[in-house]
Length: 449
Image (cartoon, rainbow, N blue to C red; front, side, top):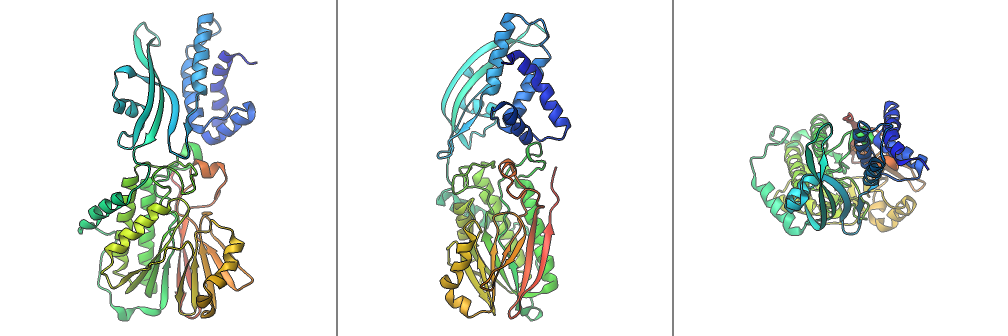
């Protein structure tokens, strides 16, 4: 068995060697597991490296028995892992913080741990404090070992929360849109053309760090990409002058429900400020629809839910539907099925997030939507989910088109190779009422590293 002191001293050399060869923290975590059989998250590996690097400055070949015992305790602290209860969203962990935790308030401890007091509460807490001699001197500093259980204060966005946020957003009539408004002259538009603004798989709230995935992604970057899509939609419509627009909301616009998990309880890295995220998302879509109204005579909006945040997307859709209820140019469809259909001339347009068995989905459409299928010759199915562009023709005359996602990958999706190697993008389309798919335009986004 390798001496524990040597483990700490060798850890720095091991990690620095991998980092010099371009390894991300996620890849280092995988390699460490392959070498030792010990599973550590990328964050735990980074913290272990930082601790070991500090300790290595004080280590030499003349360590006494007391120093050995101290190092063993240090290694034990490095091996401690954070655990998450996927059902409740609770976090259980032990860590060391600076200061005397016995004299701190719960909010002080939360701030020390890096958790926002308005989002998290301490359900259980055990602390132990001690004095430690500072390096290179005789002065001491106070450190505390903290064993804690955290729980989300509000595990779900309630209907009341959504209503209050909607009131706030829609009461601000002076919110500027990204595009200058102008009058719509209906005679200048082609009533036989449809502009399709498919589900925007933005994953608003997703957090990714370049050290783990090679790229950065957060709420600010996501909203910048949404703004770019809005600008491209307006520019595309200004040239093509479609008489109608179909806007599809949902498809993982939000990254998670407000408990930090997907609808099916898959844990993900997410911004926990769910009220903030809902407000930002609602404001973004309001500004988008307000701008689009100035460039197209008639807008139809439908919901096609994703698998990450069905409740959040439903609240978003309902808030927008109620706001535009008295606007004749904007129609919201009262249909909440996971598979949707819209007929435009000789075209049947089907929508599903794409997280279901594709064979069953494709074979079910002619039966479930037999009227729409029978009245049209052109049949299209639009899906997402896998964050990449893909097109396929089926034997029953259906063409399915997978819409790419403008979001970047987080650590979980990178580790599981979900959409790995794909460039963030989005696809706009126009349709002719008789001939079907007319034009297609891709919008690409540069990764932020």
